[in-house]
Image 1: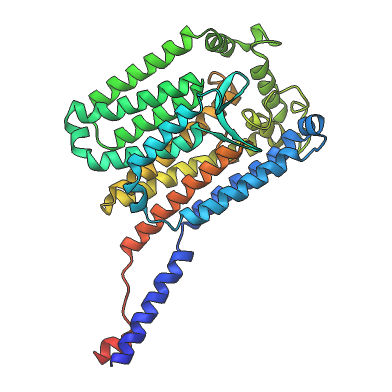
Image 2: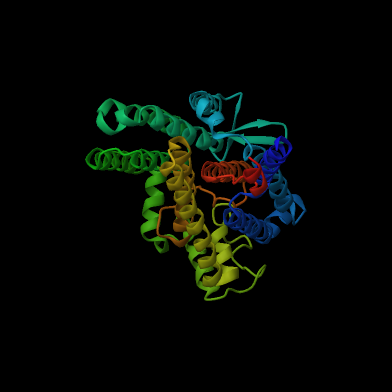
Length: 400
């Protein structure tokens, strides 16, 4: 009888061990990989002419993006095996590390300036864009804070205002770089997470309006941001200067029609559309793959965000609040950034320098997004672990 009981225990443990490697969300993995692979193809297509002129290698950006994807997938493979309690315990140190990164990037001898912005910390051939890892740090911190101070956030003004003060400090550092796009994405994500934490609607909407007013004021008071707003309203007033990017993007959408001009056949990427492989890659995709390809990508992002919220809801129902808030934050930050990037490309939002998650060229962005997806997979895995009931072997039951 003892031998049979031992065999039953060993069999149950082998099932659990197989689950560590096989019981991740296959739909989430599949959709994420489709976006990554399609993005890699579009990076190659949209950058081939620019790369050939700048580096005499048509696939220069393709190879660099491939390396970043490999690094991101390698980190994801490790992080998906780290229990969420690890990130919960490190939530405050992660925030401090993020703040230090944002301060370091502003120091002249450490920060590296590109196109008038101090956003990178360069070490040899590698460059770290400080705002990207800070996204992870902020989401982890807010998830931990909502667990520790959840009741205060719901009932007291002090509990609600403290994370707003922290986000204001982070936003101030981002604006000093300046990185207005990352500031908007992080602030919107933070407000969304606080809303999911149960803050009263009146207080939430009051701060949403306040944040919107402040961000609009910053845009209006800054000459170059004001120029972007004017060109956004009517880019055809100055199609060869301030409205150049947007008009070229709109031409790309118009040429794409229903099914596109064919992969690799874009005209706008031939030095007409600036930043065709980064901020405006979606416009090239729309030109080459048409409305059908554009809608396919949008639906994939919608599924990704929906899945993140479903995973978060399941975690919340099973009492894992940190996991739930982390999942909500991941869904929000990917969804908001994708919405802004696609909106900018389509001319429904003012021009902002934001990449399309998992797709646009940008090593830091693709690596951090892969890490966020890995954490989301871990949340879903722990949801399944919490709901698993191991049924003993029938023979062991009868023998007992």
